[in-house]
Image (cartoon, rainbow, N blue to C red; front, side):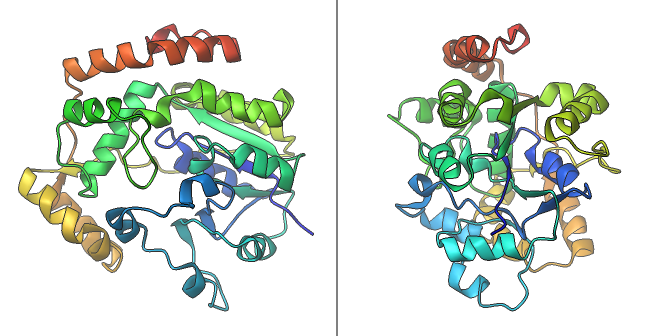
Amino acid sequence: MTKTNLFLIGAAKAGTTALAEMLGNHPEISPLAIKEPGHFCEDIYAEGFSASYQKMLRWDEAQYFKADALDQRHMAFVRERENYDRLVLEAAEAAYILDASTAYLPSTNAAANIAGYNAEAKVIVSLRNPATRAYSHYNMARKYGKEQRSFLDAIGAEGALEKARWGWDECYLELGDYAPQLERWLKYFPKENIHVVWQDELLVEPAATLQGISKFLGLKEELKPLAEEKHGAEVPKNKVVGKMLSGIGPAVASILPEKIKASVKNIVLAKPEGMEEAARSFLLRYFAPSIEALEKLLEKDLTHWK
């Protein structure tokens, strides 16, 4: 039976959507109908999610798989193995089948589950400065009406938690603690099967970064960058808009035609302001031990993150 043999595991808000698209555009790589099916991280979905997260996710597994032809989706959490196997079975024939679920990196059992499923799989992980990753994540949460607090208040509140939970908390800090996350993957997969992409290098030297990925995968043709750049971050223009988006944003966005959606976005959204210095200082202190651990783990100088 054909199995997924290429996993792009995160990190969330580290260029993974664009990277998944570049991978999926390659003739030797076939993406699944659901970009992020999240099947192998039951520790994340086992206890369910908050009402607001479920509302945003809009996921009904039984209903989705009733269809004769599966719709394209960005994200879901496919619990049943037979449903996941159908995603794989219906992917176009190619050397690699791609699962690009960003929940796999922070998951405590995804690495073990995927190793049990396909121990020969190739794993790609994209990493970004955890401070800028957290701020990008925060601005995304604002865009979808999920966050009304200041950034400093939001990260301060999470820092006081014993552990933030996916689908309940935003995990601004939790998702940037890369070292222990990667240690789990290195426990179950040999180093030669894991390729680390540095988002800042992908932005500055895309050709060299894509060449490295192509070599890692043994592709006959090198990966190509996207023809069009992805749009930058967007946030509500004011608090009134933010509260409005928290109530109806995701539902309305899912049914609006693209042309109308673009016009509405221009009215209600704007580029985010820069990160406050107090928040930046907090993040530098918070992530310092994790960054040092990552440097040792990957033998990589990350001075530019400090």
